[in-house]
Image (cartoon, rainbow, N blue to C red):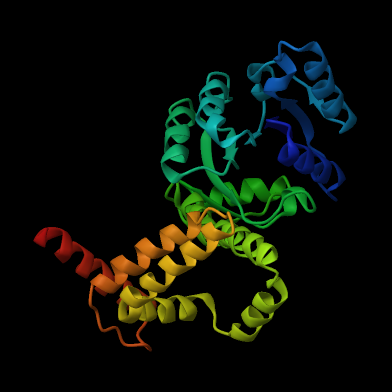
Length: 299
């Protein structure tokens, strides 16, 4: 079995290392990275050494990497995902699996698919759902493809076992992108909160207060609770958050996340909805969407 890696940064190296050590599978690994053709000879040589040191064959063009490949794994930067697919499609063997593991919007995945599938390849939308350095190809992943069962069987033979979530290209990436709203958003909120807390000399107190406020609710239950709180008290909370923004500015911390919070609290509070606190999240969101639609129609 031949597996080609398009991109050999952090993810490419991790996957190559883990596949090379996998029990029962011994794929021949090839790799192309754009740095191999960098105008700076030192950069090109360093990338070639990086690939060779991982026990992977260096390819100086995408065509060389994907020729005769059974599986192509694309792990480039997100802004190059569609271009990588287009370049690979020109030389992709009929029936080869093209695993797009890049962190992209579903529309970007669909554009990439429109290059691969007409060329006779099988496009697989893959979303990597945890840091990849430690576990490489065994990192938890979601996937979507036109024929999930057949694709899954072929991937298992290569030691790849993503969890398939459907046959619609972009579904796996949608889950990852929307999860990132929360995960990366919390990281950004952490920076805004604790940079200010350290400057103000109250970091321990803020952290202790947050610890005391932790609940054991699952995310769906917590989200439903948050929806009800915002629709019931959004206007008042927006006013409080404007004072938070003043506090941050006084500490020379830009209130980027807080400004978004003010807008959301204002918008949700202005809907004047009375949501049942114990209502299902889907029912709450349906009511909120209907209220937003009615508000747009009135304006």
